[in-house]
Image 1 (cartoon, rainbow, N blue to C red):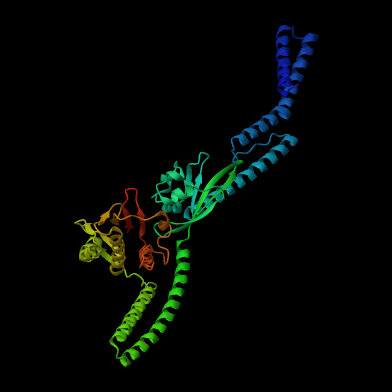
Image 2 (cartoon, rainbow, N blue to C red):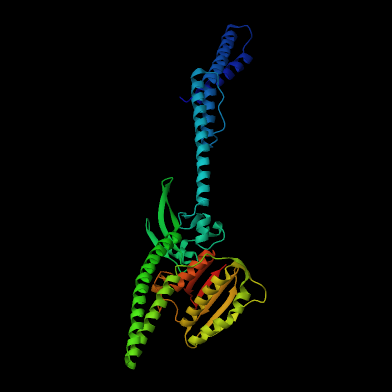
Length: 425
């Protein structure tokens, strides 16, 4: 029989006794017996409520507190020894749960802070494969101003090369990519379990500095060794050639010796040019009007384009465009880019220079044949070139100077067929 039924029977007994007392004659034997029954019923009701119903209601309230996850409330003692032991155990359990919940909340807050300031990009996905969260580093890598702008998007919907890369990663796949702005990233797709459900997430680690340091160390060593060996050999050869030229009277032989000397000097200039690529000075920055700097160098750019048969079109704003740069190094960078664009455009092609939004962005465009997919993956790599007479250090010098200025840049052939070099200051 349920406890509530017993309680109800006792209440009915008392009510029945009270009704009988109202109907019976006072002083009779039956009246006395019914009075005794009513008194016993009241005592039973008090004892039943105190020893059974009250502890039971207290425990029910405790279960409700657990269901509501209210770990701050406590149960009051009921004055019954066995029940009070349970109440004390329950209150101790609630105190432990509150402490663990507070500890877990503090740990989660600390973890959130670590994720937010982490230099590694972290992107989490929901069950539909859409972005549910990201930190500041991920937003910066994926060309967003704020991480919340990414919420609800699928990685493949992000309009950037890196977004397309991570969107095509398989579970537990790790891929290292070099983008068209010389940046190198290691992208990983992993997952974690929460409430028995697997939640995928991406890690984006910037390896540019480490890769560039390793590459620079390698090509510096190669170039120093080459320069040392070649220059020493050329010096001896030229000295012998000079001596031989003084002793030879045959005009044809003298001409041949002179040609060999010229070739040796050209070789020396060539290796010196290689060596100079590893001696880029630290930028000496100052406030410069970018539009004025480009305007003053327009004759130089026009002569570069004329040499290839291409035409220069330059559009600059009338107002000042202040930037904090080293004007000498930046002039070398722009000259190198214009030269590459003019060579790509070729006879009858055009090279456009303009300053665009957002922010201060220098854009140099050419309508040449464009960059192939294979070449795009190798851009800014030491010694890589598509030119027959190139040495593969021009874009490397450009990327190092721009990185030292903290610029964001990219080189790509767009969907309209035009190749654009963008520099965002």
